[in-house]
Image 1 (cartoon, one colour):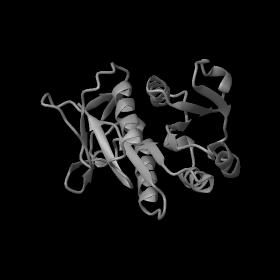
Image 2 (tube, one colour):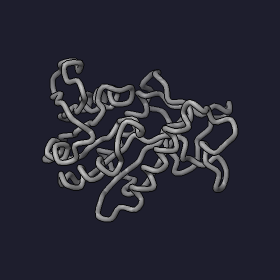
Image 3 (tube, rainbow, N blue to C red):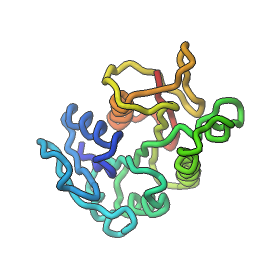
Image 4 (cartoon, one colour):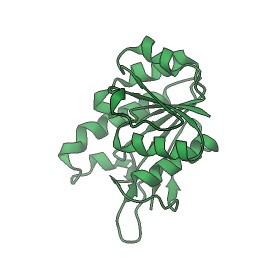
Length: 203
C-alpha cells in the first residue's frame, strides 16, 4: 500500500515508517524538514505544513491510508481531519495518547491526581482530538492509544490489545515500546479491526 505518515521524524513516526518499509509498503514521510529524513528505499520525504489544510490535502491525495503521528499541541485537529476528508484518502489512523484511557469507570488517566503536570495539556488535547473524531460522519478513522509509558525499546511483536481501558501488566506497570506500538498500528492498517474506534496496546 501507499501510506502517508505525518510527523514521520518523531519517536513514533520513525518506528511506524520503519515497520511499513519492513513490510514492503511505500511511504510518503511528511515532515517540516525533509532533509533530516534518512534516505531509504520505499520512502519519499516531503515538506508539509500542518496548518495549511488545502496544501496538506493535496499531499495526502492518492494514498491508501494516512497516519498522523504529531503532537496534539503542535497541530490543529480540525485542519488535520479536514485535510484528510478533502484528500479522499479512505483511512485515517492517529497515534493517540494514554491520557483519555479509563483507569476506572468514567475516570480517565489524565484526571487522576498523580498524572504528571508536564504532560497534562498534551493529554487533554489528545482527548479533545478523539472526541472530534467521534463526531465525524463518513470518515473511517482509528485512534490507537499507547499505554501510560511510551518509550524506546524492542520490537517483540508480543503485546495485548484493549479498547478504552488502560492496560496494566501483572507487575502494575503500564507500558509499550515505540517499536511494538508501530507493529500494532501497521497490523491495523493491513488487517482493519477497529474502524471508527479507539483501541490501545500494551504489555
